[in-house]
Amino acid sequence: MLIKITYSFIQESPSNDVSTISNLRAADLAAVIQDLAPKRRVEVARALDDERLADVLQEMDEAERVALLAELEGERAADVLGEMDPDDAADLLREIGEERAQALIELMEPEDAEDVLRLMTYEDYSAGGMMTTEPIVLTADSTVAEALSRVRLSEVAPGLASQVFVCRQPLETPTGKYLGVAHVQRLLREPPSSLVSGVLDTSLTPIGPAAPLGQVARYFATYNLVALPVVDENDHLIGAVTIDDVIDHMLPADWRENELDEEG
Image (cartoon, rainbow, N blue to C red; front, top):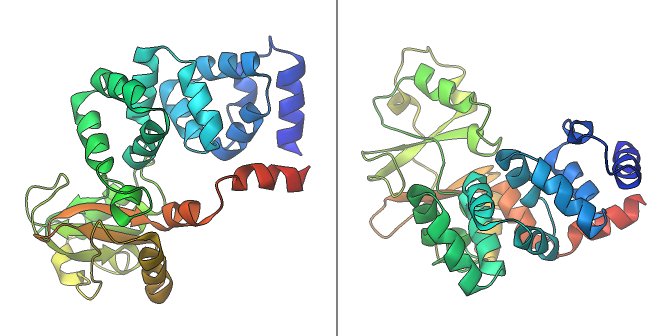
């Protein structure tokens, strides 16, 4: 009901302030924006800050987000892509055409562009294509307190906050050798000064980046996972797949549109 009221308010009164929709969840705001007239849709998108617009684009249908990104100036589009999760940014760049994608990559910050380019080398419906390159990574001599402080950060997605991946240096993906995972539920039962190496789960076998969607989905279902480590041939952690990414790829491409039709 709130979405319908908000949509009507914005559609009928283009002068209304964007603060009207500031409290909507990203998925709900994406639904509102997709139903606006094209001109108004662009006005609202341009009024949102980079981080908020990035969150919204990640929740939009493929065709709609491609069209909206095309309306943004090059620098602004690159800044928004830099705020997106690397896997979502890579997906969007695959959708907009090689020439436009290359131009935007050149405008992105080098560090952001490096992660996105790496992800674009993998098939979309593979572990590598679905993973994020920004999981929480710590060394074995980190304390439980350090691990819990990382998962508490507001910018960490719930799926990634469920566990901490433990590796040798360097800690930026691709990391040093992957050692195991420390689950938050276990961390909460340990003294803050103890080391994560003492609660390390080494029984969870990582998956390779070429693993297809079906294999990844079965792995999640078999072991009741929220996130899954992805390693290269040298056992370096290169990313993590979260359950929300698996579900997104298993649903039909127009699932968001169908959901709105059912609500209407």
